[in-house]
Image (cartoon, rainbow, N blue to C red):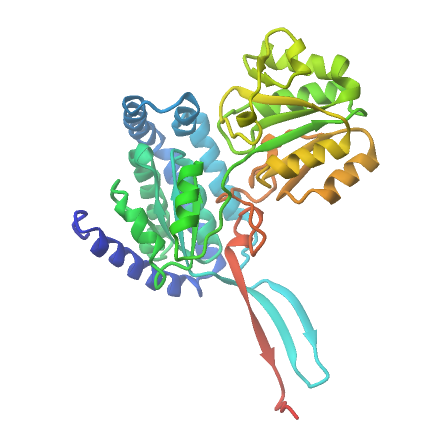
Length: 421
């Protein structure tokens, strides 16, 4: 290992080893990758006591650092959450291998037979904050797609990520795959992040997963292509044709299940026709659940709400706070979302098929939902086993980024002595 005081040399070595591992992985068999992930899952579960002990070190660091409750929740690993990591690893292992999948196939009059097939991207760089489970998710998905990955976890999750990474390496070793296929940057020094952003010869794409500051830094300074979402400014619109029971269940779950994830509800829009019925009931239920409701002038008539300011529209709280306002109709809801949303996830609650169809057609968020909690905005819940993040860009990967989204493609062209006129 290079001296961590020499960050350029450290990162250059990591990059070179990743590129070599990627070359080997490109031809690795599906069975070997599946075996590596299954054995890594076994190692995580068998080592859960050590992982939780490492996590306690990180939790102490987070408390000393003054992390918010939401950030501390993201950082925490319980036995149940470690079980979730194991489940995610096994789910990715069980998926069909995307590499080599034929996406399209056709014949030309010239005699050419053409196939477009999935191929690994190469080397993925993942920069993330707080959540140590990203170590497992990112490592597993990149491996499944035949990519090498360089992981740079947050300083607050350093020990937890290291413990999980050791389990992934154990799986690689036992399956006969290169251990350098999944590397964790062994330093908290922020200079390592800056180095990754410019490693154009060794990293093919960067995936940032964290807060607005981190993602903005990566998007602004990276010379390597980026898959990212800046914020999860998630809206739910309760239409006048909403079912009251569904509205209550969905909104409460979307806001309170876990407030610190990017799929959590941040802004509630209520059709004017139901303010005094469904709207009032949902707002009161949110406050009863401990949520601070920052309301527009109309909703401030509900006792216990606080006055919203302009800064509350388009805010990602990641906390037990929600902005709420009344809109005149579906057009008003769509206009608000277009202005303030981050194209992450937005939802309509309605029994009106035409309203739902218009919501789906006229908005261009990466994920649009109807009558379902936005907490489902997650690759695991989409059947991807896990995700490396939610991408809100429009090129290549969009929405939950799973193994298939971490591939590119190439054309395989065959002829029988074909020549062009």
